[in-house]
Length: 173
Image (cartoon, rainbow, N blue to C red; front, top):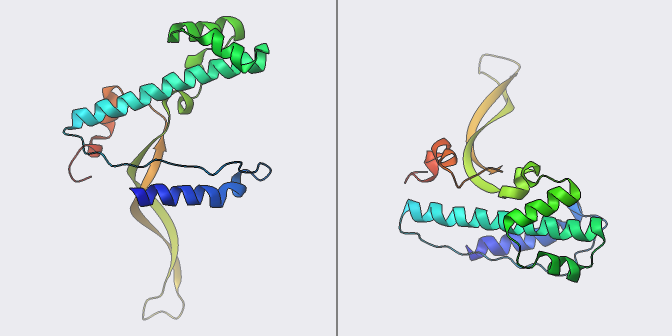
């Protein structure tokens, strides 16, 4: 796992300019990687549910915080003070009543985060095939199935995700 975190960090820096041409990378990034063995599938699901709920809580806070700064003209200190002690319902009310933003309509990517799962993906490629009796080869489409990491933006707290992807918790996935 440390190799994965290291490789990701170096790739992040290496490819930064490909995605953010006019914005210099101001500080070197650091990424955490760890392997944890959970005693049961339920414990794993509980952990992942907690992480997704944490993503939601952080995004809701940041959405309100930056909206207060950018659209109300509050300073960062004032926005932080305004949000101190608020609950999720309070933050939703601020967004809706002051800015006509229904947080539930924000893209799932922000509200739920990104989940990467391995899925079978069919890849169609063209291949030239030449049989011994033929003078010229033929081009034909060939479909190959491989496992690829696929990003999903969905709720993993409920049962629907786990019913749609039972292979995640199976021993041979």
